[in-house]
Length: 267
Image (tube, rainbow, N blue to C red; front, side):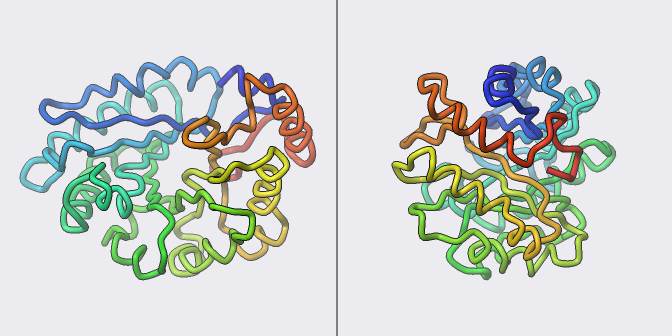
């Protein structure tokens, strides 16, 4: 992250990383803990995606051992003063369809409840529900945790497939359903341009995500996490192999951002 911040002339607000729960034994969090020093140095809010790719063992009312293991790993970050927005089972509505996760709503909802219960005594851990962008509001409703008090942040993982898609049109139905009163805050779990986009097109998407019109339409929308990676297509804003891309992103970020980055809940 130090390289990203230095190259773009910013202080990133969020730091995302991914980890998969094991098939057997308690999770030790090694994938996430490998990044601990970098996360601490950047003073970012940590958004770990903890993925139940081997099933839901230890995530039930009768056996909550894995939920407790998750809470133990999260505490290792919060003990270092790091705020955590826990993206447990992110994109669950999609990943149960492609085999990444098994089961269905009947497995996810009890698991979410157990994880939320396990971290409830740690005020620096917030639960962040980020389904994949869906075709209808009802799909989100079907997967929404039953106890809304366990959802502190809500968002979507959304990668538009072309430049014609409008962010507010996609996000506002979910926002209006659950975030309009401000009890649950809205944030983008992941985003990027899912086509062979130029850097100008990537920045145009950022313009839309951060516009005054978007802020007015969704006043409890507090942040964005950009997928700065080359996977299937090039999502880079900071591109270590392309100085022009990085320079254009840096210029965009310098217009209307602050060097100190965002405070928690104000990205």
